[in-house]
Length: 121
Image (cartoon, rainbow, N blue to C red; front, top):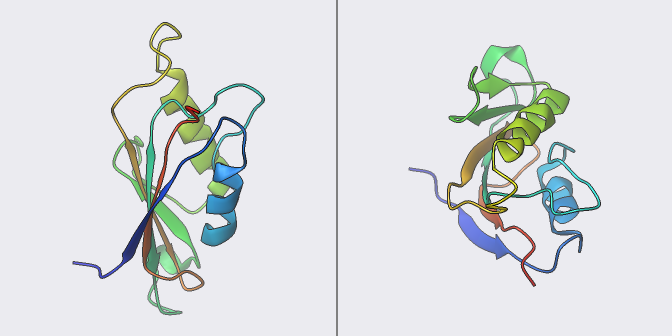
């Protein structure tokens, strides 16, 4: 069990919620666009890893059970995978109640859990 604080991030569409999350995580990895891009809530867990203890000798990496390969250290590929998951949501539905669970392991983050909700307001 990881001791962490939890925060819910909500607001109007395109109000910068995702940019704030990326700033906290230290990486750009969430799809962005002019229209509603977030079709699922993103449950982002940041996990502090002491230097030298990270997986595969890489500094920062991501795990996500919804990704086919599960783990990535290329944050552009994380963005591609998140885009794919959001594109799987039919236009007629717009938002689904199936969150994406993403864990970011890094020595530059604090243990923290954030939930990025689609822009509803």
